[in-house]
Structures are given as C-alpha cells and as structure tokens.
Image (cartoon, rainbow, N blue to C red; front, side):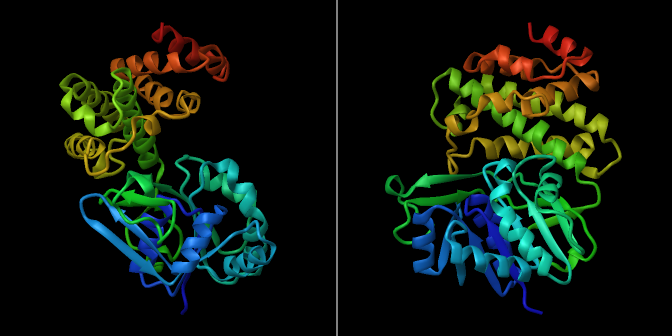
Length: 362
C-alpha cells in the first residue's frame, strides 16, 4: 500500500525526526506544508532537504514535495494530500497556529478512508487534544501526543559552513544524534513504520519527565548562563557550580519527584535508570557540537513561568512529592527579573497552592 507523510511546518523537529523517519521507514511520498516563501522556493527547486546531525555529518532526503497553504491552488492540493496521508505531523511554533492548518486538514480528513495517525509536536502536554478540537473528530483518525527529547536549532546559512536546508536557502537545520521519540499509542500504529518513534500506552509520565525534567533544567541552566553573559550553552561546561546546580535540580529535585510519582510505571522511572539518563542528558545539553544559543533557551520567559510550564510546573511537582526544589526556585528568582512578575503571578490560579508557591518564592 502506498504510504504518504504530510508534515506541517518545516522546522528542524519536522525535518530531523519526521521527514528522516518517514524516509528511513520507506514512505512513498513526503510532503511539507510551509508558509515561508524562501524555504518553499529553495526546497521545491531542489526536490530535497538536507539535515545536519551534530558530530555525525549531514544527510539529504530526496523526493520531498513542499506546498504553501497561503497559495489557493496549493491549499487545494494540501486537502488532497491530507486525505491521502496515513501519517501527519504538526511541528508549529505553538498550538495557537493550529487554526491555520484546519482548512486543509478538516477537508482532507473528511474524505479519507482507513487509519490515519496525526502527531502533535508542539511541546505541550495537551497538544493532541487541542489539535483534535481544532480539526474535529473523524473515523479512524488518531491524534497523538509526542515527547521529543531531541534538541535542535535553526542556523543562518550565511554564518555557517554547514549545508543549508536546500541549496540557496537562508536557513539550515542542526539536530543532535539522540533519536528516541515517545508517542501515544493507537490501534495498528506498530505497522506505521516511521523510524525513531516508540509508542507508549500511557504517555503522561514521559510528558512530565520531558517538561518538568529535561525542559525545566535546560531552562535553569540557560538562566544561570545568561546571568554570566554566556552566549552558548556549551560554555556552561566550564563552570562547575552551574553544572552542579543543574545536576542537583535534574536528579535530586525533578528526578526524585518524578520517580516517586511514577514508581512502577516504567523502568525509566527507577532511580538508577533515571540518574543514568540524566547524566547523559546533561552532557547533551552542553555539547559543543550543538552549541545551542542561551538566548534561544530562555526566550519567551513569561510562558516558561506559566503555572503548568517548565519551571513553575516542576516546582509544583516537587512540592507535591515533598521534595525541596531549591535550585529550581533560584532559577525562577533569576528569570523573574526579565518579566513583569506581577502580571505573571496574576495568571496563576488563586488558590492555596498558589499561596504556598508564592511563599516559597519570597
């Protein structure tokens, strides 16, 4: 049976995970939906994309089509492709962008037959549900959350010796080699064949480990780096005190809390296994091969101080498990200098938990 993959958004998560996984999984047709006209023009001219893997070189994936949904005739083609695709992935800046994909996804899904797996890769624990509400319910269409621990970045092609996304493109994609991506499960998903995806019957523990472990401590380390005017995350490896704070936060604060909350859920949450994963993750965070930007890591601080987001959410998790989140709290105290703190606090629920949290943050 012919297999078509549709990727919405042409960023490094899309290209470095899903396009790569679909090509290695022998999908017959790969189509991207993208609104940046420069990316559309250069990828269309090449008929391929190139993705760089830190320390591993680059790989070019051929027979890649690309369409711009803001062009009426291409929007119509996307409706046909959405109907045909057995796998769809959204990798957009945030869930608020789903509304732009609704016209062609809803029209296509209404015409489709057979199972369709729709992955949401916006780094939100509610992304799949929000996508389902935006697009609608259809028979045999499964909306699936993802847990993406693979770090990546977009670079300016004019400032790098690495190959761009396509010849003449102004941007390039760099991803790390790590490629274990957890997703929700659904009937028949084991036959889908996108390389690197690992379905879990209960994704919630892994979503929390990503947001309240990986993301929280990555942000903490970025805040500490910003305080010392560092430019890239790999520079933090030269500061033992910063690395100690990050390690303690990841293993003894976030990790201890996650392992208590999800004891028995999966071997991942056994303390020794979590510690081994955490040590590897810390090395990846400061890899000079990726050289992630400190500014990128701490961007949009208001969102990252949201009630359910990485730092505040991680602190709340720790408090719920009777674990002292001392290093995470210090990170919030530093980051709050970069926002309108009163406005951030007003966005939190007005209840006893908020009062406890505000007392801890004095």
